[in-house]
Image 1 (cartoon, rainbow, N blue to C red):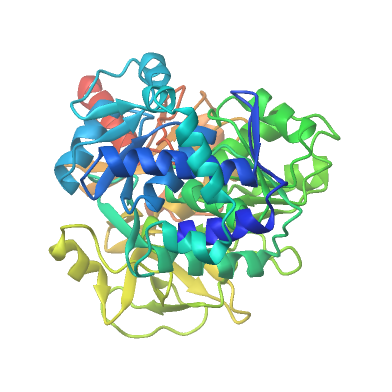
Image 2: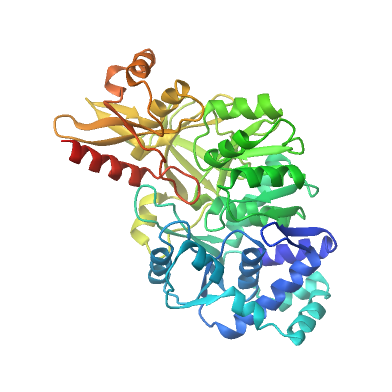
Length: 507
């Protein structure tokens, strides 16, 4: 189980830096991290009886300890998105999963101006309740051999739930995804081998733990491999994060393209000299970003692919085996196949179809949602809802969400493909996305949305050289700040509604 693997790692690396919380200016080695987790675990176990515990705390030492302690207490952490609509998200999680207690932070609620929700308890109050006796008992327990200590904390089956996370909700209401200990551990083990992560690595943890990408790569990957983790709660504080990378000699940077583009714009030559690996995921990576990291810092940006339901990593490029534009080769314990959209026919190399995956990292179903589970999992194969292809060398190429294909004039048009071509003709600092909105005459029309005003006539001339007329954007809309999810993904649902409202008022 995850907390057992953490205990094993902590016992092997007891005097090594485990977590440095830059925001709190506090550092703990593995031994202190283990002791603190055991203290919190006893508090949680004695005070809260329900099987699920909500956690709504920013990326920090406190959140890491709370997650580990919750697992040690035999509870399942339910990670709650606080980036937008925190109170509504908290209540949605409570209703969906049937629990009450949410461990959160007074400082967070004040900062984001979030109302109090019934069931919320504060990590600050829990910490103040810790006595000298609590500390002494935990310290004695932490000194036990790993084999004995693992029996002292909760232990059951690797198939038990380790966490409940919610899908991003960028296209529809979030679904509750239950991942087992086996799911996450198998994904970590395969990913560590795939990209060559080392115990000497120093990770920067800036991704939110309510997103599977952060929960895996910015929390448990470093702690289970005996690496060091440096946390900072705001990935949008580009200059601060850039300084942390420089000053803390960070070797592993993992983020979304949106975050990574912010850091590259703030970094001077030499700021990233300590970086050994930079990994991009959760959204498509623009071509200019690869070039910037390589030309400015001699860092190869490795793009990967995954989903909440797959713990999350399905595939990722490797330092010595990569193709820019691809999403890399699948991890060795994950099988991938490409199926026809219209049937279950298996497609050959280079053919574009639905991406289906199978393996130990794949979840077994959505929480309390048999209908959606049966729709997405068939014969052990999970339908990702994405379109892609496998090439002759085994690299996976992502072509976009199936929902991000639009049928116009009998042709299936990939909005992601239109985006990729549009990006080539925009200045590097201009963000864009392509959406569809209803059209009374043709059913749907394609709209390009950019973060700055552009020369639309000139851009259309260039697009005509690469796209058929049917795939050309019919309108260009400027939104100064493209709405994003807490994970850094473009929020297509919100943007579509904003553009629809603009279209309505302009009629």
